[in-house]
Length: 165
Image 1 (cartoon, one colour):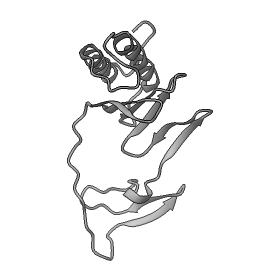
Image 2 (image 1 turned 45 degrees about the vertical axis):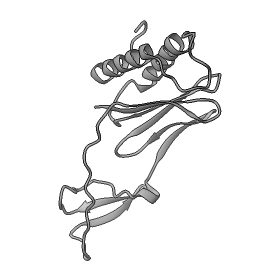
Image 3 (image 1 turned 90 degrees about the vertical axis):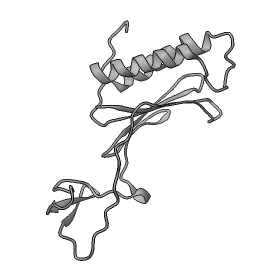
Image 4 (image 1 turned 180 degrees about the horizontal axis):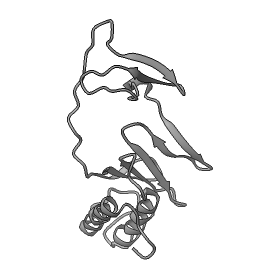
């Protein structure tokens, strides 16, 4: 399980921090000729492989496209809080001041909600309390970087944050 990226967005919608903590695996584009050796079927508004196997594509795999990727989300009163695809989950935590913390993680990664609150705590402690940091400006604090990376390592290993972490 892994946490791919962390983003902090200010209330105006500008990216003020980005951390890519995972090297994505290489992807290969596959081209098939007609007729396909795979049998596709529609299941719960998704196209799935029902029969056949070829080049790592197996029964049960969903067929996804860049322009129409099936995205399932969980809505809250504030809007979209979590987007889920077959390859990642996008989690968002919006503070009362309008700052948004976004985490891209493996769909099997647990404890992301508590991780988002921990990132907010790190932001409050190491960015906002830094006398050289200006609100709404890019975050360039070494202690923020160090503590965020440590929190991501703990989250990847343990899966959750308990109280007082």
